[in-house]
Structures are given as C-alpha cells and as structure tokens.
Amino acid sequence: MSEPIRPKATIGGIPIHAMFVPFPIVCFIGALVTDIAYAQTANIQWSNFSAWLIAFGTLFAGIAAIFGAIDFFFGSHDRPAIGWVHMIGNLTLFVVALVNNFVHARDGWTSVVPTGLTLSVISVLILIVTGHLGHRLSFYHVVVGDRR
Amino acid sequence: MNPRLLVAAGPVLALAALSLGGCSKEIIDPSRQIGADPFLPAPRQFLLPPMGIANVVGWKDGQTPTVPAGFTITAFASDLAGPRRVLGLPNGDVLVVESGGPGLEGVNRPKDIIYRMVLSDSHAGKAPANDLLLLRDTDGDGRADQKVVLARNLDSPFGIVVNGGHLYVAETGDILRWDFTPGQTSLGKPVKLTDLPKGTIDHHWTKDLTISPDGSRLYAGVGSNSNIVENGLNAEEGRAAIWEIHPEDGAKRIYASGLRNPNGLTFNPTSGQLWTVVNGRDELGNDLVPDYMTHVQDGAFYGWPWSYYGQHVDKRVKPANPAMVKKAIPPDYALSSHVAALGLTFENGSAFPAQYKGGAFVGEHGSWDREKPNGYQVAFVPFANGKPSGKAVTFVGGFTDKDFTVRGRPVGVGFDASGALLIADDGGNVVWRVAAKTRAPAGAKPPAH
Image 1 (cartoon, rainbow over the protein chains, first blue to last red):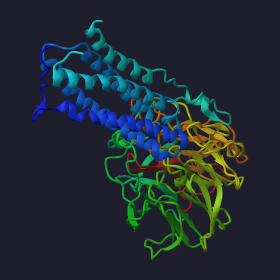
Image 2: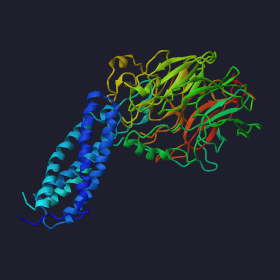
Image 3: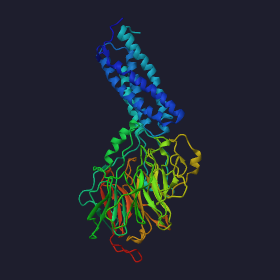
C-alpha cells in the first residue's frame, strides 16, 4: 500500500475539485435529457434549457479542471495511471462540450438534431468513464491509499 | 502509453474542431444574386456563422457619401439622433422619424449575451431619440435651417404617411393619427387608430407604413419575432406579414404573409401595385438568403418561416409544413444577401435624368452576417412599365470601407418636393439630399415651393 494522494487545493480539508465536479456531471446529463425532449417535441424551451446547461457545464468543468490539475501535479509525486486517463478523458470532454456550445447556439432544429444531440450523447459516455475513474481516485487513492 | 503525448491531444483536438467551424465559408460576387433569378448556394450551418461587424465611426466634417456624375449631395440635416424615415411634403417641408428599438428582447440563451456584445459597435455612438421632426429649408440652399419637434418620446416610431388632412405614424405597437395639413409646425393630440403586434419580444420592431394611391387603405409591415422561429411559432402570431388597415376606423386584416421583415412599403406610381423590400433569414452562410424586393399580392404567402425564396425548405423549422411550403411564391427581384434593405421609393416626376425615370431607390443598411460588407448603399434598380428592367447599381455609396469602417448606414429614402432624393442615415445621424445638377428635362414636374 502506497501513500495516499494529498489534495493540495482544499477548503477545510475538502478538495475544491470535488466541490465543482458535480456541476458538469449534472449539467451534461441534464442537457442530454433536454436534447432528447427537444428532438421528441420540437418545443423550443428544451433547446434553450440545453444551451444553458451546456454553457454552465462547460464553465464549471473548466473551474474543476484547474483545481484537479493543482491536486494532481502539486499534491503528490506519485501519479497513478488512472489519474492520467481521468484527466485526458475530461480534457476531451471539455473540447466536445465547447463545440457543443457553438452547435447549440444555432437557431431552431439544427441546434440539436442531429449534431448537438450526438455531442451530448458523446459527452455523457465520456462522463461515465471519467466519472468512474474520478471516484476510484478519490475513494481508493485519496481515502484508502490503495492502488487498485 | 506516453501520458505527455495524451496531454497534447486535448488542445490539438480543440484546434481541429475550431478550424472545422472556421473554414470553407465560401463567398460569391453579390452580382450573381441580383435580379429575378438569383444564384442560391446550398445552405450551410456553422459553429460560428460568418460575420463582419460594422465599426460605426460617423462622418468627418466635409465628408459625404459618393454620388454619380451629374448629382450633388449635401447634408440636409446633421447631428440628428437615429433618423430612420424621411417624408417630403408637397410644400417642401420634410418629416423625419428618429427611432430606436424598444429593447424588450430578453436573454433567452447564452448566445443572446454574446450577440449583444458583438453587435453593440454596429450602431451610432449617440443614443437614438424617438421623435418626429419637421425640417424646413427656408432659403432653398438644400440645407434645413428650421427644426421643430412635432412629437416627442414616441414608442419606437417608424412609418409615416401624410394624406387627406391626416398624419399617420406607425409606432412599434400601434398606429397614431393626427389632424395635419402640410405647413403646420405643431400637432394636437393624436388618436390611436389601431394596435400593431408588439408583444413582449418585438424582435423586428420597425413597423413601416404606406397608403394606397386612392387613400382608402393603409398598409403596415410587421416583421417576424425572431431570425427563424427560435422564439417559438406562438410568438409569430400576426407577424412576418403586411397588414391592411382602414384609415378611418382602424379595421384591419392580414394582406400578405410569409414576409420575414418587410419594410419600404411603397406603391409603384406606374402599376399602382404595393411594393416592399424584405430582409431574409440569417445564419445559412455568407450568400444566403438574398434580401429582395417584390410587389405584394393580396392573400399571397412568401414562405417564411418554412421556406425561402419560393419553396426552398429551411430545415431549421420544425415541425415541417409541406402544405405551407407548397403555397409559397417567389418574390420578384433579389437584392443579394444580407444587404438589410430597409427603404424603398420610386422615382416619380423628379428632377432626375431620363435613365432614372420610374426606377426604384433602395436604402440598404448593410450586412453583419457576412464576412465581406454588402449593402451599405442606396441602390438603384431601373424599372420599365412598373417592373424591374435591369441590374441594381450603387447610386449612393461610400458608407463603408472593405474593413467595415462604417461612416453611415442608409435606412429610409424618399423624394422631396423639389425632386431631390433624401436619405435617412442612422449611422452618421444625417439626412442626405441628392439633387441632379442640371434642371429637369422638359415634361418633368417643376419643383414646388
């Protein structure tokens, strides 16, 4: 068993990264739901929901990334492989979300169908992988110090 | 697996995605989109739509727009606050409407915040007034020396008509009527003739107005409440249409529809038909959709929102409506893409040379949804027998440079009693007067005084 990672950017011992991470998770999953709702109904309110969710998701993903990077690069000399995968996966997610903002800025149907909806699906698929790895990092590497 | 290689992959992916959005915005010569049968490229969608934003710097002292040989141009009035409509009265007086939008549109999407910041440069630095002015040139030097405010703080006024002892002004939410005889320099209390669609968004807020030659019906243009129904179809009730209104009791009906943003409503003096210029939809590319002018048929449908330029379906509009697309008729004459035609007047017995007889003058406010400027001029379209008979040419130019350094933006156009063309320039805050240098040829109406 190796030393646990010690997060560097914390408030009262709680990593700031962990505080911001739920925002993009909820926003991007929410955007997929509202994209599907728009594709089903063509009711413009759902596409507006999506545009806001993706915008705030991207913003908070950026903030979370900064604190995550601080923890990862300055918190420990011992960087696990799943940390790298988690980071690169989320950087990719960030780029996909950025592009999705521009697609959702179009007017009407083509702001969602098919490109916007496709990017929302890809975002959530990446999230499932990177989110899982993130939880493994925090539960095993930070809390237990166990490399599994 | 080299982690550092993977770290590099993110930004590279980002660049690739952005270049995908930034590249291959083709651009064609606008002359291919002028006339009855414009070239229409395939519609395109973008991550970032093509844009070129006017940087309005105004006119320096002594600077004027350019006119063809044989004409002079002078500032009839300057230092105004958002002049958008001009109307020459038979006694030589000139009415000018200064106006700005009602600013009702809220932020519905993150995009609205960005667009507001990007487009803020494209208006004159000075805030527009919402006044109706009377300008008078008492010494006949082509410059107004008297200025009277006839009505103050109107609700985003635009169209004006003087007919049969009345003055009508289309505000963005209604039509007001005053008792008025040319020569008057003050007004009494107006009556509200009728409401016009305004609502809580009022995206295209300019309500233009004209009257039939026999004075029996008013016609008001009501633009759409969105670019392409991004505010929902319910918001478009009564909009993208020309309304016919009874000038005495205000009874009204929709005369023609599917006209995204109709302005410059004018009756052609030769044919007696109602004409309008219309602004087409945005964000389909540098060269879609051409703005146009057309005579307007009673009961006709011109496509918006479901189709453009006849029956070219716009797939951004859902649910689709094939039945309405089938009804859509193409307009008469394309003016090329994104010129933002807002003013139209026909030559009718002016002091202009023979080749201009009966032709159309179009005030083109100028493009934003295009990488190179288009419009920013008063175009001339020759007419014969009340129909366009040749290619549009620049009549008054010099409003912008190729890099979008913009001195002025033409809106409304109209002839004054002396047979000179007046142009409302809301970028330069000037009303320009274009006069023929030589006297009118025999047969033309002599200038009135």
